[in-house]
Length: 240
Image 1: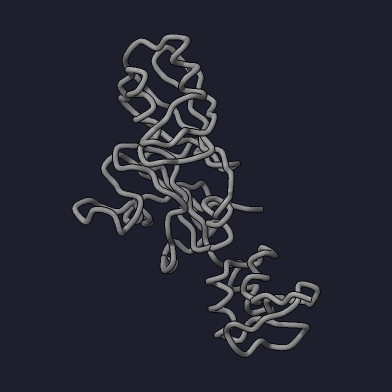
Image 2: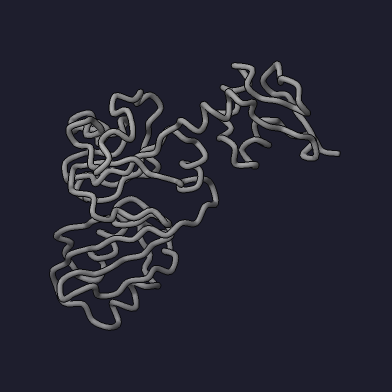
């Protein structure tokens, strides 16, 4: 019977990411058939029982996911242009949005908190930052298909034919785009629902049909919505 790395099995079970699994193995927090796994790279059959021990489960449960309403002028990733401020700088007590101020310790450790996907500097809206590898994988993992919804204010005339092209038929940077769902939200704003997120994709799509984007706001990723979160503020994502 085929054997695979225990870190991969833990990831497939949705208990943690492979990177997190390797850290837990180093710390002696992973069990194989009830016994502590002692070294990285250990393999097992999928029929065997692979799990985190109580301490490992507790550590994983304490990993936080945050949603932020990113303003224009902030970059999503630290490795972007150093000229600009990273959105993570906004994750502080002053910008916390909640009616339950005592439900969490706002001086939590931000180590490992990273964006699950990008949102360009000129755009606003939903940015998810997480310490949880399984959460990140569910959004940006290889072969993951997740809807992302945007409200886009535009200037210019849009013909019915060009609206059809926005939904399907455009090629950007030599790549044929996947079908999208594009419709008028109101007289000057379109709603885009995409299942891919190529660099400045919506802006490029609009330019190809002679529309100028005046504002772009992401309001949903999968089943996570921005809701009434004010611009520049953040809150914890509750999963229960």
